[in-house]
Each structure stands twice: as structure tokens, then as C-alpha cells.
Amino acid sequence: MSLALSPEEQAIAAGKDGAGTAMRIVAESARLLGAQRLIPIASAHIDGALYHGDSGTLFAERLVEGGARVAVRSTLNVGVLDLMGCSRIRLEEPQRGMARRMMDAYRKLGCEQSWTCAPYQAGHRPAQGSDVAWGESNAVAFCNSVLGARTNRYGDFLDIACAITGRAPDYGLHRPENRRARLVFDVSGLSPSFLASEIAWPVLGSLYGREVGNAIGVVAGIANHPGEDALKAFGAAAASSGAVGLFHIAGVTPEAPDVGAILVEPKPDAIIRVTSEMVAKARAGLSTAAAARTIDAVAIGSPHLSDAEFAMLERLIAGRRLAVPIYACTGRHVLASLEQDGRRKRLEASGVVIVADTCVVVTPIMPELAGGVLMTNSGKFAHYAPGNTGYAVLYASLADCVESAIAGMPRFTDIAA
Image (tube, rainbow, N blue to C red; front, side, top):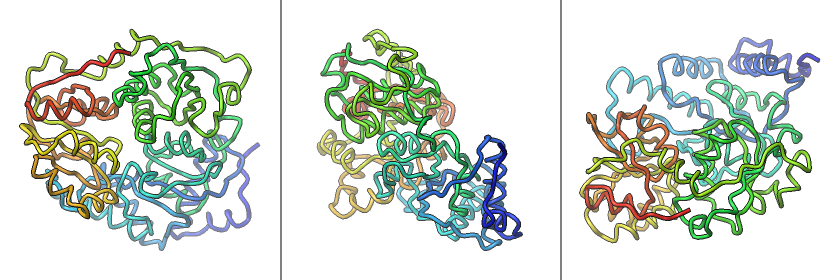
């Protein structure tokens, strides 16, 4: 069957204004995807406001000129400018001006000025079972998996078109039958101490993404809820190393009370039994500068740091002075909390560079440095930083990142899997 638009949708698509442009984009995308209808959405998270070239700016401005406005709550992913003035962006004209115009255009479209890749920690938490149109890979994985809302990975232009029309194509992860697991990712053979550690979750996420690709799987063997920051780290790494838009963790995420409840069939297509050797290989794969004697920077906050993660960072620094900077990327919702209780001043006095509204892998903030070495506790940073920043990467726990930043050289504390 072909796509069938309602009379209202047909009327909007026939218009020459911005809403008509958006409806035609959504409808044509639905046809290409094989959807038979459009469905209403409760909210959107827009990735398309990140400047990659003038075409994105001109597209957004055309929507504004056509009188378009978002029809549902729409938060914004990171941009390329730190509008809060926390860090210096090394972006020159005319790119800087075009990026600012793009950010202004999305504000005029009615989007919330959230500028964060973790909108779910900034109060944007759609209800379980609701349909939404979210962009940005970690946000999509968290929305689907941890919140139990339903979205596909909406790319640039389609995301804002869905927000303006309040509709999305009915296909993929919007459909309950496509959300069930076909394979089991069993971590019960790993030590409880490793699974309880902060370092485990980006490593496991990176391994999960490589093993499952874009399949739907369920993680078995997690005894206790690891906390949202751990799930955030897992999903971000899995979405970077694979094409993961939805994962389940038995007994933890809302659609998987146990393994059997979420499987498509009683017997899974595959069971991946994770060993300590697999984990060690995955962890090693997150580093591209394993023999480095010194480091030039530490970058954390991909996805953006939560308030709790900043509290942990301050405890680990304990008032000491850093030998190399720690770039701590976050959203303005957390920045407000840091300023209110004086943590921003204390962290910056130690040598932390707080980055708001953006992050160091999507815009030039760190110095250009041939042969530079970056340490991170983020599986997503580890995946993208070499290509986006030119720095080689060392992966470590947050505690080891802090100790290394203080020493100016790598410091590791091994946690066996």
C-alpha cells in the first residue's frame, strides 16, 4: 500500500508556506521509507541546528520566512557556538556568522534554546509509549531505551520538518513489533566489581554496538540499576560504534522486565556471551595512543555532563591544580546549577574549561596541535575525536582522567572485567 495522507495533511502539503515545505518533506520521506501513514508526535529533539555548511542555515531561514513554527515541544541539540561565553570557539568568519544565523533561525521557529545532547537530563522526558521525532544518536538511544518513548533516528531537515508538522512517518521503531529483541548480550560472566564501575559502561556500549550493529538486543546479567549516567554512556557508545537506536537491559529498562518478556521468539537468534577478553579488547580499541608518555588535554561530557557528574569531578580534583586542561562539556541547564553554588568558579580555578551549548568534537575549541594526545572517559569522544580534532585518544575512567590531568601524563588504575 502507498502512503495515504489525511485531508488536513494534503491541504498543508499543498501550501507554499513553510509548513507546506515541511509537510512535503515528511510525506516524501514517508513514501521512501515505505510508511503507509503519518502519525502524530508529542515532541521533537532537533539535531539539524548544528552548522555543517551554509545550506543548513539557508534552509532554516527559508522556513522562518515562510512563517513556519514548531507544532510540538522541540529542544535543540548542540550548536557550534558557546553562546554562554564559557569557552573560546576558534571559528572564523564567515562560518561564525552563518552558524549564529542558523541558531537564531531555530529560535525563531519556536525551538527551546536547550543546546544539549542530553535533553532528557534537562527536563525533556517524553512518556513511555509516546511517539516523538528525535535526532542525535545518543539522545535517540536514551529516548527509546531508557524512557521507552518511540522514535527513529531522525536526520537533519527531517527532524525540524516533523516538529513543524507535528507528524512523523509510521515505520521502524514507532511500531511495537519492531522494538522486540532478537538477540541476547549476556554479561553475567563479568565480575560484579567491573559492572559496578563507571569505566564499564562506555566499554560495554562500544562492544555492544560492534556486535549487534542495528539489531535489537537485550542485555542480560545486570543485577542492579546502574543509574542514568551509566545508561547514557552505554547508549552513546553503542550508537557510535554501531547503529543502535534501541537497546534493552533486562530488569532495568522499561520494556524488558526480564529477557523472555522482550524477545520476539522464545529462542533468540543469537546469544553473545561477553568474556573478560572481549571487554579487554573493546577497551583497548577505544585508545589510539596507547604508548603516549604525556597528554595534552582531557575532554569529558559526550553526552553532556550531568550535575552529578560535575559533583564527582570536583570531588576527584579536590582543589588541586591541573597540569593540562580538562574540557568539561555540558548544557546550560547544568551551568546554571554550577554558577548558583559556586562550583563553576572552583572548577575553573583548578584549570577546568567548561564548554556549554556545544562540545569539543563538533567545533574547534582545543588548540590545533600536531601529535596531540587527548584523554577521555567517553566512548563517544573516543570514537569521534581522532577524526574530528586530530588528537590521538586514550580512554580511561574519570578518576584516571583527573589524575592524568594533574600529572600531565597518563595514570591508569586497572579494573579487571
